[in-house]
Length: 311
Image: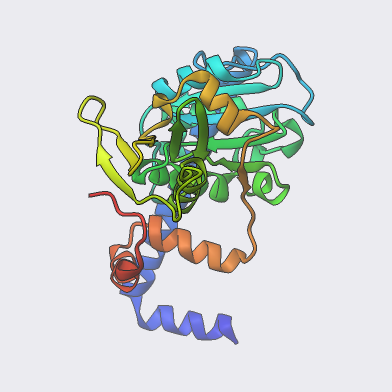
């Protein structure tokens, strides 16, 4: 029934038929170009003995049950991560700037992007028709970006890449997002790290305690230290807490980055999962696709509920 009706429609509407054919030809050419670009990159890797990217600081262990690849935002954070990591099982791949939005790019263009190409080679799985999960070089792939809007955007671009081209990595539980602290709270020599405003306030309340003779908790006020520009929480008795807001991973010393974000014994990470594939597909298409109208509607709908806004 469909064949007969479609044949009649195309005969009666030759212009529509021509447009359909042109679109099919363009799509076929795009697939052919993408396949050629992918094969060229993979052949080049094979000829070079699968040479890993020069900026990749690889780990010593080959045991995929232990190994981790940290995809880090920027050379500055990459330097701290390389110094603070455990070289036995943690590898670091720094990315410069924001990677290409793969939702709006064909595979052939995507594979000419140096940052994406480095990541594909580091993963070891191949891509597209040549993808093999068994060749994944690391048991955990960890996205580690700054705790700000730019960092969130980079995470979203990377999640788009993995969702569209490496969904099996997500489905088998290999993809994670690191959770670096937002604040460092220090009272005297005591130091705590906070991952939210609520944790910061709780830490301050616990670390600044009223004197033994006080009948009620001391009043707290927040001032700005003129020398450092940092927030300082003071009490009536003069005791104060220094609060450092981390604007980026590069601001953290290697030992701080290890202790808070990379040490398996104390870090916090989120595992990326796909609970509703249809809904996930819609969200990626809306937020990252080339059609602007759905994105405008999404922003208009949710604008008043934004919690983290950088101005």
